[in-house]
Length: 388
View (cartoon, rainbow, N blue to C red):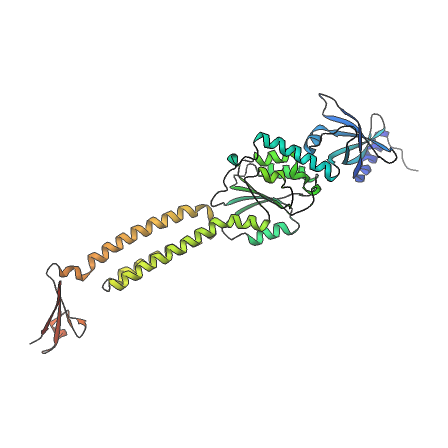
């Protein structure tokens, strides 16, 4: 025969098992009571068909996060689990979330909240922040399962990004708490931009993104927020308050890549321009090949280092690009000075001459023989002569 246990121990055991019976329950609100100074509220949920009733308790913080104003007669869905209240032995249902039922009710709530936030100016273009030109530290909030994160990472360029990823539910009202927690996790990460994404779906599936508390959390995030929350009808309110919204994860990745790709394009144009100038110099300065080739090598190495910098260390890219530009300009000036200084043709104007025989420069009397034809190059022409 089993040993008896106390009433308290039995109810604890029972409540542990009852917790697994959590469910989403549809019903009509009645006897809604919210007492000032209390951390919880009470209501009943009735079945419209046969008036079956359950008694519910809900913490005010959970009620506030749900974003629904309950009243008697309102049809809702709650997520709750049964529990026996030990002091009285009565069963109650602990509600953790509440959401409206029906497209009409959801649409009405959406429009009302949208109007309220619009009056406050939360959708104004004047308060939207610019996405940084070269984002490097990127916070990402979405579900780790599904195509969204895969599409985003597949299209994100290899520019040395630091990604701070937080896995979150993104479906329905129950995602609200996850999303709020994720935003809070990334709040102090010194991000350049926060990305929030999910795929398309019904108005019910977007409940979390039309939640007032979440919408305000997006608006008040310390870094600019980029959303990729696809919806083909009413844009979620979280998207409307974000600093920039695009329709898909691929579009999010392309937007983040854009400035980096443009920088690489500008670098390639600069590279072509620099080597084009040196090519012209090579044609006009046949006596300064060594100086020019050394300059070409130096600049080619600098360009290569800068390209690697773009791919490997994004935050230093701008500083590196400006430094390269400054070095190239200085090098061009110095190289021009060296070329002009070392160009033998400049010496001709100072009374010197260059003697050639058979196309070769003569450096000694031993380089010529009697009767050889000579070309004497002076500042204003060539004098034809012959050795005797």
